[in-house]
Image (cartoon, rainbow, N blue to C red; front, side, top):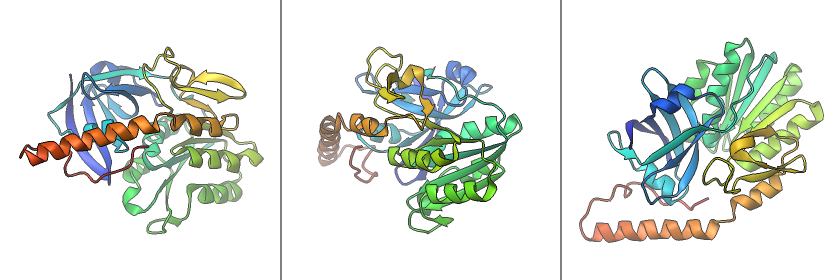
Length: 296
C-alpha cells in the first residue's frame, strides 16, 4: 500500500496527491510516469510524475476526474492508500542546452512540463512556459512554474485570465516575435498537441509531444499503447512517452483513445449506481461531493 500524505484540489475535478513511493522518488527523472492501481481489483492507469522528493520518499501526481478510476483516486484523502504504484516508467526527457526552450501545457498536461522546465533551466536554458485552460480556475501550477521559468504566460479559452485564446495563438506570436526558439515541448489534449506541431512545423523547430494513450502493463507487453510515429509502430510506454510531434499520427492516436469508450461509460455508471445505493442505505459515500463528469 502506498500512503497518500497530502491531497488537495487544484481546480474543478483536478487533484494533487503526494504519495509515499521511496523507490520511485529516488529514480524519477522528468518525463517519467507511473502505472497506478487504486485497489487490488482496479484497472491500471498511467499518471505523470509531476514532482518528486527523494529525501522524503514522495512523488506528486496530478489527476483529473475523467472516469470511474480517476474519480475513485481523486476521492482519497491524506492517510489513505493506493494499492499499487509501479515505476518510474518510460524514457526520460532529453535535457540539453538549446538556448530558448518553450513548454506548452494544456490542462493537466501542465503537470508534465513542470519538471521539464526545472531541468531545462538547470542546464542554462531560457525557459518559457505557455499554459492553458478553459477558464482561470482551470489554469494550474502557474506559481510553481514561475519559480523555475523565465516567463510564464497563462491562456484561457474564455479570456477570464491572461491571453484570450488557445495556447497556440500565443505560441505563434512568441515564435514570430523572438525568432530564437530552439525547442518546444508540449503535453495536453491531443488536438492541442497536434495544433502545436502545426504551428512549429513551418519554422523547423524541434517539437516533442508527450503522449498518454491507453496503457495496461507499462512495459510494452500488452500493446495497448501503440502509436504510429514516422510511419512505424511504437509503444508509448517503452519507446516514449515523448516523440517528435511532427511525425506522430495524431489521427490514429485519437481513434485509439476512444477504443474503450463504451466500457468506460459502463464502469462510470456502475460506480455511480453503487454510490447511489450506499447513499440510500445511509452509508457515507466518499465520491458524493464530486460532480458527474463524462468519462474520456
